Length: 110
Length: 120
Image 1: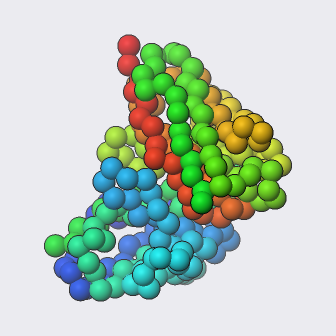
Image 2 (image 1 turned 90 degrees about the vertical axis):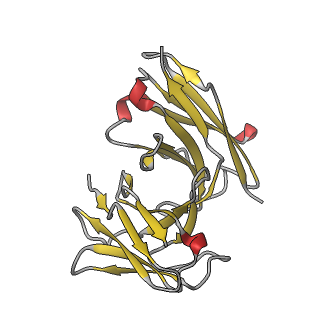
């Protein structure tokens, strides 16, 4: 079994860029796709990135995803921050028999 | 348009068995690749994957909860049922069901979630 570790919280000002990391504890980050979900208070999660770096239709191109094999981690980058981006963000991946979510990162846009 | 909705008891007693139903529309669980998963979220805490069932009846369970979980599907009724035995107060959470397009793909459509409280 593996774990995905995210920072508990990040904060940044409107208009700036923020990056949230997601580190895989065992197994290669590149071996299985990573997805990113946004969850606003009281709402169900929605996908902002799938298959490492793909954006669903309707998600602005301010959101981007990447993976880095050297650090065995994935990253979600949000540029041109808006107050509406304030939410919890979760990474998620899987292996042959286990789907895993990261612990979530609370993004504050202040 | 894909929609999913969870239903079941809002309150269960410790040691009881929880049965949740996910009723969906806009897709068929007989379509190749398609799956429905269950994910839960304790109040103020992170998402936790529980189980998945695919179109071909392939079933996957969280290793830590496998002994307590059973997932089944009724394709004709467009429903997926999750049972969890021996409920404990730590199982208090919002339980979500979600659609996935193929093995390993993202959960692209989620239900609204249902809060289950475990208390005597």
